[in-house]
Image (cartoon, rainbow, N blue to C red):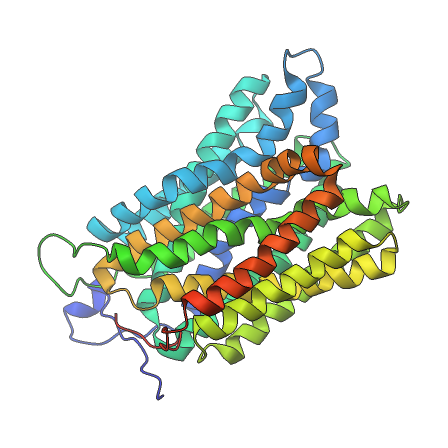
Length: 406
C-alpha cells in the first residue's frame, strides 16, 4: 500500500500559505522527549541503597525509598489519559513545553530537599510531567507522519527508549559515585531541550471545528486491555532478571549488567523487526510476540544455567520489543487528529499501570508458587494463553497496522 506522508500547517506558515513538513529534526526532538520517562524510571535505581542509608532514621524508609523510584510510573498511568484530553482540546505543543520545564524543576528538586516525604512529593510531580511529555510526543509523531512511516517511527520510539534505559542506568551508577543527589542533576536536561522544541515543533491545525470527536471506545478496548497485560510481560524480566541470576549463583554485578544489556539489545532488535513487519495485522503479530515471551519466560523458569537463562531473556526481550510498537500502532494509528491525544494518553496510561503492577503481581503469585521463578512460569503460561487467545479472537481482524485514518 503506498505511503501517504502527513503534512501539517504550522501557525507561522499559515500567514504565508507555506506548508511545513516534519523531518529528522522533529523526529529527533520527539524521540528525545520520549526518553525522559525512561530517565525518570531508571536513573536513580543505582543510588537507592545510598538513599536508604541517608534516610535510615525516617519511619517507613524501607517502604518509601523504593516508591521514590516507582512513583513516576504510577502517576504516568493515572494521569496520561487526562494529558491526552488536554492535548486534544487545547494544544499539544504548549502542554509539551510546559511539562518539559516543570520536569526540569521537579526532577532536580531532590538536590536541595532534606526530607524523604518532600522528595517523594517531587517524584509524584515528575510522574505527572512524564505522563504529559510521553503523551504529547507520541501524539505528535502520529500527527506529523502517517502510514508505514508512522509505524516505523513508533517502533523507533521503543528502540530508542530501550537503549536509553541502558545508558541511563550506567550514568546513574557513575554519577552516584559522587553521592546520591548527583544523578538528579541530569533531570535539568529537559529545560534546554525545550528550546529547540519551541522553535522547531508546531501545533497542527484542527480538522474540525468545535468539540473534538468522541473516542471509538469499542475499537480502543481490545488494544488497551491487551496492553495492560502486555505491560506486565514487558516489565517482568526488566525488574526481576537480576534477582533470578542472583538466585542461581551469579553475584558479579558486571555479569548481571552484561546479561541485562544483552536482553536490552534483544528488545531493540525486536523493535527493529517490527518496523519491517508493520504491514501485518495484529492477529498475525500478537500470537508470535506473546509466544516468544512465553518461551523465554518458561526457559528462565526451567533452568539454573546462566547461559540458558540468558537465552530465555533474549527470547523474551525480542518478543516484547516487537510487542510494544505493535500494541501502540494498533491502538492509535487509525484515530483521527482530534481523537489521537486522548487515545494515545489512554494507551500510555494502561501500559504504565501494567508496568507498575508487574512486581506486585509477581510477588503475589510467587507466594503461592514457591518464589520468583515459579511466578515467572505462571506468567509464561499466561503469555502462551494470550498468544492463543489473540490468534482466535482477532481472526477477523484483517486490517494492516500501517493503514491510517487520521
